Length: 272
Image 1 (cartoon, rainbow, N blue to C red):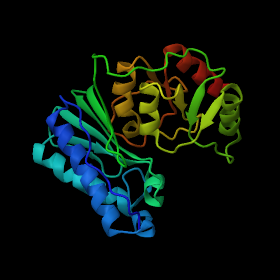
Image 2: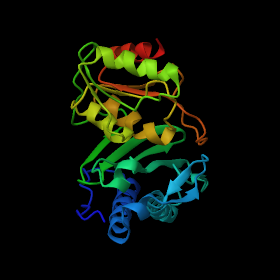
Image 3: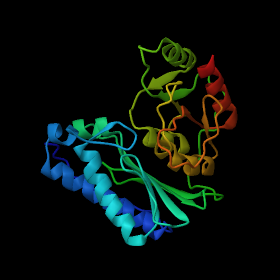
Image 4: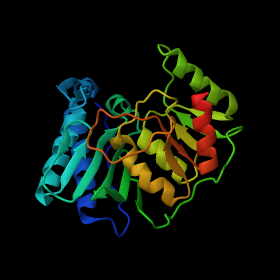
């Protein structure tokens, strides 16, 4: 069993009420799952997700609680496992119930709940909650966040987090090493949503998927509000537009950077 307690989220003032309720619900479901199941049970593959992957028991337990909370408010939901639930609303909550599931099921305390609010296809607000600590990052589109990026513009000497390289794909492995050879520090933390907010608050300079097309919209939506509000950018390494689309088969290689200049350098280095 994973014994340390899961705290309540520390929500900033002014969070959208639906967003706040769903975040609290996700954290409570995460806590209850840890109390009931051991590591192997949390990690057990129990259900085929909408994107064709097999979801863990932990993913399903947290997402089921989120679905129930969202249904009470009759807004739409786009979530990692279930896909799109259309309740006929102009508002859609885009949710990653447990980002960093591999960490969470093994007891590595680095995983997150992340959600963004989309109204008529435009992102308006988002929140990311570090589930093991309750710490939250919140931003409203068009408003400055209470934290700032490092402001770094050069990849050479930067601190960069990346998804792991894929040895089976020589092109992406080469891209990973091109970035690593220029950076001063490289981390593999395995939670894209948390790695993005670390860029937003200036704890690291950038985070990237080095061309593996791993990211879905649910992995990037929260960062697409929080990071620009802190002075940074979220782009795709291949230059594809990041669009609000309920189709979770669409993939991107997200690049999150302290400045547009660093983002473009990082994307260009990945492309080679």
